[in-house]
Length: 445
Ligand code: 2IT
Image (cartoon, rainbow, N blue to C red; front, side, top):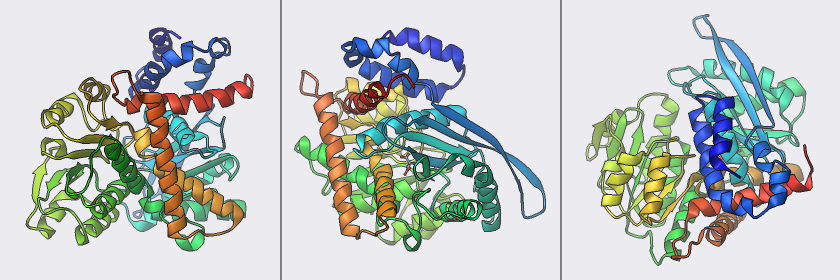
């Protein structure tokens, strides 16, 4: 494989889709050596097939707001790869959503899902609709209008969506209700459901919990411990909440959270009622930092800034893609942290990732670190299929096992001659090999 040639061709076909091209480039660079040891992959045009989604569905979503005004949003589902299981991946509702972002997310999801050890293909979807400032009734009508089109393309053995940015428990409820109304079917077609109606225990916490299990293991493997350490994280949504909760339980002190308006530094630690308050802020649909600073006077609000300027032992991106850039990485590296991990999907720019690896910083990518979320969605699918509910202990035990296995795969494929574990390379190769072998076995389809 000639990475440059493949990327040039991809850019010609999909000009300007920067996030998608970035995600593909990163994986191709990681896997090229392994790929070139398999001439049968080249003959089967495996890479050329793998980097294009199997199918993209786009549709318009017309809906009426509380004042009677009509809105038209765009809806998408990118069904990226179904080699190892039904399409699986979240829905993102955010004004920034476009095809490039959903293609990058679907591509990443394919390898992430492969790493979980569960039989799930990769997909992503969503809309440029934003829940910010919208009433409950407006969110419900939007979700119903979105599902009125999407339901044709999903199903428990076909494609199983879930939440992502802007899609939490409330939105999943409305989407599931609409699906059921349209199809007359009650099945596990969406994950992240409420506990009383088919959801799994630990699913809301799973992305953040799994991330901290992974980080703990990364640190333990390098004779480090989270206990008593400071953690700077971004975000204020479901992922940041789960990460802050588990980091605190493991004895660390979370000193930052962030929102679109800037970040909060709280030297006393963001724990207990402060973590609960984050969830209230999320569902309020308003800015987060100013209300937090008003509520907890010991904290400081830095408008328009990112938490990466604070000194911490551990840095975790928990908000969105490319939220940590090369300048941020340089600032972080100057402080010699113990560990940096992406919890958001592709939280670091290419420049930042390269800087961390070049500095031999203990660093891991989102597709390994945040896989606990989709893995627990997989466990929700299992429970729905066998029509049983597992206890929190059972789900947590499975989540531990899965994160452990992902860590092992990263070390197996990512250990370099100087002993440095390149988790980016390890995760990419491990995920790629599983999908590649399945695609080879299934012929040219
Ligand atoms: O990025 C992700 O892995 C998710 N948004 C969760 C996907 C899922 O199907 O649970």
